Image (cartoon, rainbow, N blue to C red):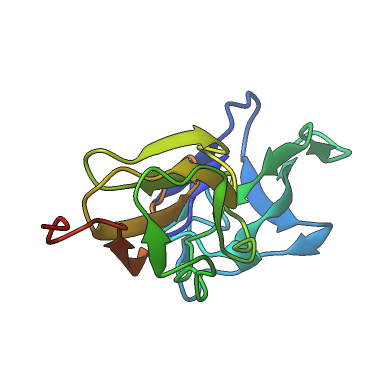
Length: 174
């Protein structure tokens, strides 16, 4: 597994005379084009890797002796870049000390987790790493922020500003 946008190389070692090489993806011959180089050498390089490069790679080696031989399959999996998280839902005006406040976003394609932050005094009770959290709020206003992530990338974050309301007596009876 490689990250989208990185480089990957496959290599083969063969013996015999007059060797020629032909790399294939999903049983289709490759050619040097775009990000592919070395399609007829012992080393195939893809730079940069795109999601479309995922697949099964083999190399057919021919030489003075027949028949040609084909390598075992090398599977290429590509971890895709992440988009921006969609709109966040959840209250924007909360009571100080309120528990069970839920903030969520729609799952982001290819994300394997989510990083949530809340302001000082607020506490994530459950859901860190998921597309939805439950929060117990403190007394201070601030932002709830989430960013999708996978093993290669952190997507753009989304923020929701939250104000805090508290009941208080501003002047005692006289």
